[in-house]
Image 1 (tube, rainbow, N blue to C red):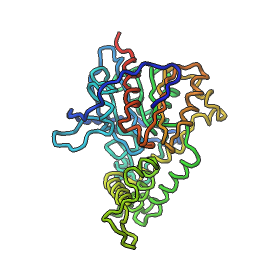
Image 2: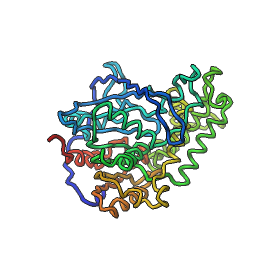
Image 3: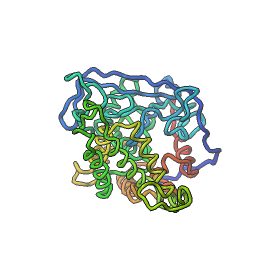
Image 4: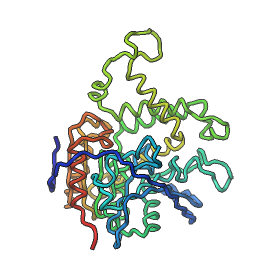
Amino acid sequence: MCRLLFPPQPIRHTAMSVTSHTIVTPETFSFDAPFTLQNGQTLPRFELIVETYGELNADKSNAVLICHALSGTHHAAGRHSADDKYPGWWDNMIGAGKPIDTDKFFVVALNNLGGCAGSTGPLSTNPETGRQYGADFPMMTVSDWVKSQALLADRLGIAQWAAVVGGSLGGMQALQWTMDFPERVRHALVIASAPRLSTQNIAFNDVARQAILTDPDFHEGHYAQHGTKPRRGLRIARMMGHITYLAEHGLGKKFGRTLRDGSLHYHYDVDFEVESYLRYQGDKFADRFDANTYLLMTKALDYFDPAAEYGNDLQAALSRVQADFFVASFSTDWRFPPARSHELVKALVANRKNVQYIEVESVHGHDAFLMEDKPYIEGVRAYMRNIKVGS
C-alpha cells in the first residue's frame, strides 16, 4: 500500500530485482589542495574511494550520485570478485534493469570523507604527525560531505547530476546538495530521511557514543597507538542502534519469544533468539567498522539542521532549491517517521517545487529503505524511468 502526492506518476509493476553478479573495482581519487571544513579546520589533502556502474553518456547528463547512510560504503552494487559472497548494500536498487538502471544511468557511489572503508578518515595517516589520525581527525558535517562530493563531480567532469539519491543520512546529503549546489541537481530522491533529527534521535545517538567513549579500550580515541579497539562499546552501540532501525512488529514476527535451545537457563547469557541475533549483529559490526568513524558520523547526523540558519523556517531554507523531488517514507519507521517526510514535502510544495511522495506500508522499520517492499521498489523505478537524459 502506498500514498502518492503531488504530482502522482504511473507505477508499472515489473519483476522484483535479482542479485547482481557484476564484478566492480573501486577507484581512489586524490585531492591534494587543502580542504576547509565547516568547523574551520583544514585537511591538507584527502582521498575518496569510489565505485561506478554503467557508462557516462556523451553529454554527461545521465550521472546519478548515491549517498550512503551511517554505516554504508562505496560498495553499493555488484561484487568485487566471482567468489565475493555479498553484493553491494543497495544491489537490489542499482544495476541493469533495476530501479536505478545502469543501462540508462552512470551511477557513482563513494565512501564519505571520514569513513573507514578507504576514504580519508580516522584510520588514515595524519601527514602532520606520521601517525594514524584517530581522534585527531576533524568533525564532519553533511555540508562538508557534499562539498567533497562536488569536487569529485568536478574531477569526473559532471557539471550536473541527473539525480542525487540517498536513504537515511544519505537522504540528508541529497537534500543538502539541492541547497548548496541548486544548479547542479535535477532530481533528488530523499528516502526514509528527515530535515533534522528529533530530540529522541539525538538522545539515542548520544547513548551509543557513550558506550564507545566509556569503553576502557577507547583511550580517548587513540586506541590504535595502544594496540586496542573499543570493541565492547562499538558492539553495544550497534546493538542498540540496530533495535531502533527495526519495527517492533517485524522483530516480533521474526523472533517472538523463541528460546534459543527450547528452555530457560537462568543466567545472563543468551536465552532468546533475539538476543543471539543482536549479539551477532554487534560482533559483525565491531569487526568491520571504526569507532572514531561511528562517533563522527552520528555527530554529523545530530548537527544536520538546514532550517536553523533561517530562523527554523524550512520553507525559507528550501527557497533556492531547483531540483524535482521524490520523497519516500515507511509506516513502521519510528526513527524517521512519515511525519518528518510530510514536513519536508509541505515545505517544498509551499515553494512550488515538484514533489512526488510515497508512503509505504512496511514491517521493516527504518531498514525498509534497503528492503524489497514492492510499492517502494516500483515507486523508485517509475520515478527514475521518467528522468530524461541525453540531448
